[in-house]
Image (cartoon, rainbow, N blue to C red; front, side, top):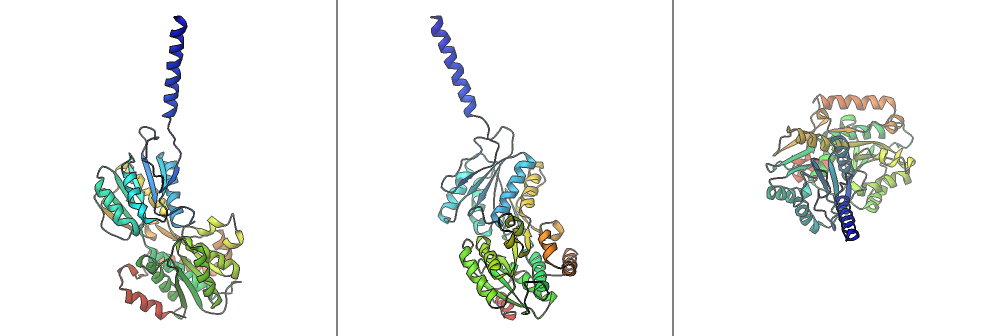
Length: 379
């Protein structure tokens, strides 16, 4: 009888140990995709802020989505939050169900970004008033009472990128030619992309009113082959620097720049820094990048939410003065762009910070107005 009692006690202890082990917290940032969405928060430690980032696409673009993921990492590291990133992929039919699945979990803060998802993201927020939502990049003003929206002064940072491109094309830099023509490759012909374009053109013309700008649209944000094809056409036509505003498609621009030994300007993230460890030759052709400081914006918003100072139900536009945008002034920029041109670019930046330069915004323009601006600088 004593042996039976002892065996029963041992069995009970083993069951308790196993149960405790299966409930252990996983404090790392995990990743899933749209086909395997998580209910969220089930493994989070009690008392931790639970934050999930939903990507309407996939990571690895070395630009927009990766910048958001960097912001989530900062939330985890600096705020001690339980975090998760969900990649929804490019099948848009899965996006709304994914939003609903995540919202049904016990996440405190749900983050996503892009005007393309704003309508369904707003609807998700309205259906879940007990949760907090952050859209880290949208040009739509309307927001539910439990949603905070951000956007960036892309017209201003693109103005500075255009100034740099115009300075480079008329310089004696090794890969610049005598043609006074710069390029632009956008993902799609839509207002959000044209906000970059109009600023870029105006910045280039601020430096040199006679500069010409070749403009191409890929019709896709995840097609590097198309990006390379369009860029090769531009480089072959006399363009010596191209501004990438095409997401993952834009990675093909850098391939073309390397093949033709021409220059490029990155977007959203410091793209040269992201590429230099795997392809230094390609990275050294990316003069600078027009950066949306998405990572810091996400961290700042969650930090304010955590301490109760975030104003929900509104959209803020982050500019140079808010440290929301800027160009990459890394070692490549300092080594590739001559010092006198860096000084001229800095003058333009200071004028933008001081609001001495007013930059038009394509977000408020008619299609015909954008077309007229494009045609005015067509090579």
